[in-house]
Length: 184
Image (cartoon, rainbow, N blue to C red):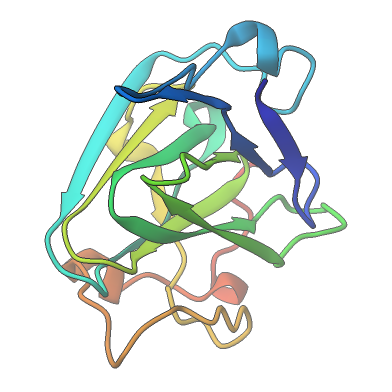
């Protein structure tokens, strides 16, 4: 049976599929429409994405798609471990500007549901991390947005030993207070 745990922002879920093991290894249902029916993660997925990060301390995000192209994401680690974060950027939400985080490991099989209206990022806490995520809307480059990973108003305690490894565009993202209304 899949365990579904709402985090401090109840629309964000930590989902842990049950693993059935024996001497050969284990089996798990990593996504089940039936298990997630009626939860905030009850989504029709349209695309699967996979990313590899070679070095511990790689940080990807905080990213989102705005407006009609907004995406909900179901994220899990296939190899290694990450600290995964969701920031509520829904204007008018009682939890606007707050964040939740969870450690996702290949060993534990944990998954994080990040709904539409949230910026998402993860930081690798091991070398050789491979992340897989399902999304409920296709990639739309024209609706991309983001929030600066180290926005002091968010004060996310990233598990870093020094500066993260970032993409050039992630260095230039705005702070949340400078983002404006992004249509959520």
